[in-house]
Length: 340
Ligand code: ADP
Ligand code: MG
Image 1 (cartoon, rainbow, N blue to C red):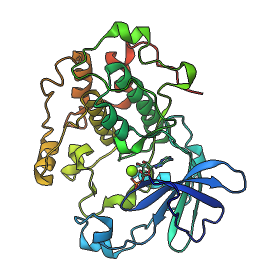
Image 2: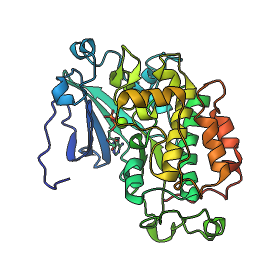
Image 3: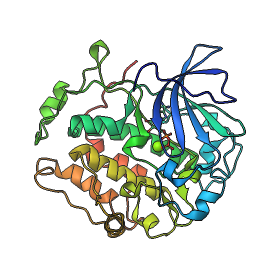
Image 4: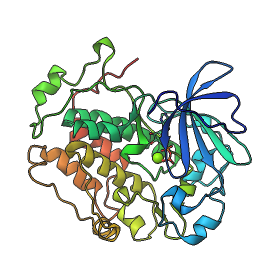
């Protein structure tokens, strides 16, 4: 983004100096910022309390009701808890959500117009951008990334009883700018020897992949279309039971994890169509393939794992513990060292 870009001034955010915009969505802007008192670098997510209009948001498919109402109805000092229907308690301490696989919420406050979330700064940006840059990840690199994400999900599901509901590459962030082999050659076969040689362990000299963390919690209420109970604009990663308007729970995160793993390994998502209706239908039926030639050289073990995640019946779908116990995860070499 252009250097020296003029930063907006938000009433109520005087304690922070905005440096640059790191992300913007229909509902929020995220800035790199400095806490004036301490000099600490952070990310600040600014969320408008009231909807503008659909031409400004670009989300034209939001229903009319949704647009007229205040978008944020139930955000409290503990936004993460609003993410969970199973555990709808409010006011518990988000500082208690503390895991290396999850972007930490450092502070929360509001003005008349906005909510402000002060977040741990993730300088490495989105996993999404790395996929675009590299075309796709090797199995070793994919495993390294997905295990970190899965550990975060395991913590949420098993220790906190929380469902994230919007796991996707745009919401998975690198703590540092990852240093990975420039362009992964197309059709590169899985090479376990190279994995052992540490081709993807450039940890020495400040390189490496580092920690991947799950972001974008809790404010999910506001980005969800409450009429259809579907997340706006993210159907490609949405589990079939949501598309079919059925009950959903932890298994939705497992579906999304399967979509992310699929995407990491081949560079394109398992479900895609230009038409939102066709896409929705594909998701509802769980219709995807391991498309040749892109999947030809990928191990059957990786495919087996994906098959157990992209499984339409949520009762049959792997839980996070089953995922972490799968041979593709389990029989892997020790996790790559992270930075620090
Ligand atoms: P939205 O609800 O608009 O999707 P997110 O919390 O996902 O909001 O943030 C939007 C984007 O801002 C992310 O996809 C990411 O690029 C960037 N971002 C969010 N949180 C951070 C953070 N803590 N550090 C760095 N960048 C962030
Ligand atoms: Mg997001």
